[in-house]
Amino acid sequence: MTGSRVARSPVALVHDYLTQYGGGERVILMLSKAFPNAGLYTSLYDPEHSFPEFATLDIQTMAINRIGAFRRNHRLALPLLPRSFSGLRIDADVTLCSSSGFAHGTATTGRKVVYCYSPPRWLYHTEDYLGSGRYKAALGKRGNLYGRVNAHGLKALIPSLRRWDQRAARSADRYLTTSNAMAREIERTYGIAAEVVHPPGALAPLGPHREVTGVDPGFLLCVSRMMPYKNLDVVVKAMEYNRGDELVVVGDGPQFSEFKNPGSKRIHFLGRVEDDQLRWLYENSRALVSAAFEDYGLTPLEAAAFGKPVIVLRGGGFIDTVVEGTTGHFFDKPHPRQVADAIREADEHNWDSEKIVAHAATFSEEGFISRIREIVIEETNLRLEQVSS
Image (tube, rainbow, N blue to C red):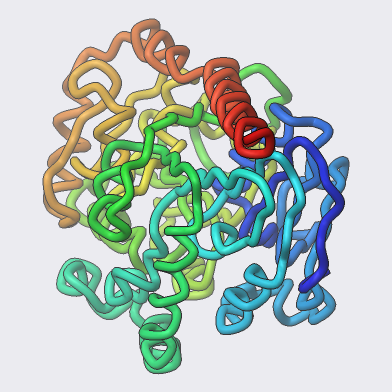
């Protein structure tokens, strides 16, 4: 598909790649629900390692999708992705780009709206992304292998990739983002004012529940990709201070092989689980824990939908979605001792599950879809004015 021109349609959707299970992939599924007749264009699609709902959509991939190694590990394709998206030309009244790195470089004949999860972390905060930046002391040795292996190759590409990324950002007619923290980051990085449109938690309590064997109810839950900047080591090390706690970690990523044998029967690394198992885990957890500086982070809203409090780092998108003392408890630095102390403090708090659920309901899928549709209508009208003038 690269280098080709896509036939005109009212609305088209573009996403970086569909090769993993994550918040961005859940959001693009919601956008597909908002615009069911829109084609979905992406660089790489691996049906075995992304949500099964994508199989029902009209997905168009690029030429690099023919290379199996790229589908299995999209990071290997990084040097080729800017040119791939620059070669894609969408002929639609409005093209909605769901992006944290590449889709915003798509060429369009109509209006281009970018829903930006974050300016590329690997491009502007490389040391933190690779696990060798400001959190290195807290993380210790574990978690830095990924950074050591990839740092030199990535750093060599950064100057040219930043130039491309800046041009791509300026080509958009309108920028949207997930949180106030990311709006500030977009302003710092691109000089662009982005409207905040909060996405909802994507996993609803209603639906099948399937028990996960080997863990007893009342555990702490951490749901995260296994990347260095997620600071999973901080949460794991916090368990050394709270020896009575059981921790269940859900998610996969480059660090999974390093974490899967934690050396403690109280810590369980499950990898990826199906949604019915994830519902059971939320329902039977005591609280959700995260030491990551999240761009947005859907997991606190997912936990809240189940009436569960969260214990999270004070920063990033968590500021938008967590109400201190009502839906969760903050700690100030990603340090094991602070996490352990925050867990004990949260255990002493009398949480009201009904208030927690009510908070989650204010971040609804219906409200998100309604606002996105309003924005597309506004941009469509601007497109019609441009054509008629």
